[in-house]
Image 1 (cartoon, helix red, strand yellow):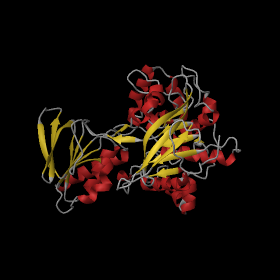
Image 2 (spheres, rainbow, N blue to C red):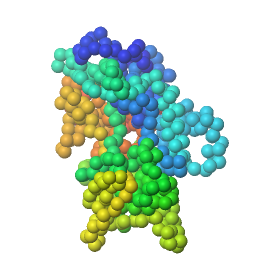
Image 3 (spheres, rainbow, N blue to C red):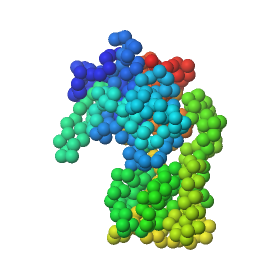
Image 4 (tube, rainbow, N blue to C red):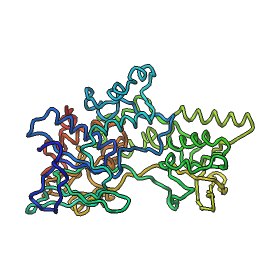
Length: 466
């Protein structure tokens, strides 16, 4: 192991023995890799020189940002503040949400608020606060362009990670770091239905707050919102409130919004121990668990928001001015961009009839897909073991299973729902997962491994790094 940070961005080519070698490079710096950076800092605070880890991260954005387009003023988190970046790994951490509140002078006020679920804007401010404390470990505004295996004889001993500095004029320099392990945490990609493309009048909901000022409140007459999940309901409520003279049409295939199951027993699917259970389960049981408990997260809405939208709808029926319309058991069949507007064709699944809706804007709250890491891996992909269907085989410690002869570790933060369960793309276990990955790196598990994917002991994986 080596010191926490390198002496500057080394450059060179694969196989150059003069390059300093980091212990870990992270691609992307969202909440997951932020949690990992904090785990590394806390580990190094109590480690000796021989066991300290040198880490570095690349992030495309010029500063920390997480779903900024949906930071609605009144939106709350769907996960407890105790599932922050650190608490489930290290309750004594100075990087906790409670530590942030204390430093911000709002701890007593938050306690009096009597809630486990802070405002989303406040939790984002917490994430920014934590990211600022480890910003020296991040190359902001850098896009990773290549991962090149470094070989010694027949073994891959390290990876050269090259990133390009993103500048508007295209003059950004390239930097290259060498590492024994890489962690890919590139997040999620907004998903639009097949045949639908973004345009001036067709947005994915992640653009909402970035672009809403483009809409003239005096002339807007109608919006279409597509989707049945939390984001769709939030967008519907937001547009209905902000544009008091406009109609909002919500289109979804369900009969009505379905409530999220956040009951205590169902929420155990997000416990760290549930990852062990899911990972060890047969394929059929994995599918069964996903089917049973998908309503804890997918296409579901907080009951409070469902009731608020129903109150609005009923109130409008009483007053005779109906602006909120629910087109249920329906799906969008086509979207046509028109001068200054968009036409959305909606088919009723009960009557099999279609309706054309002219709107100022169509917002698709249709979810996200994990970013496929294989294209980014480049030549390293040849050393990775795929599962049937092409997804990467991943060990319990989030290391991609590789062929014999590769000593460097490739870890995934996200994109592991098929192996590790529902919490893979959520905040619920990021603190524990960061500790597990760092434990694996520190113990050398990311180096030469026997074929067959032997699982590291669960107790060691869950060891708290303090």
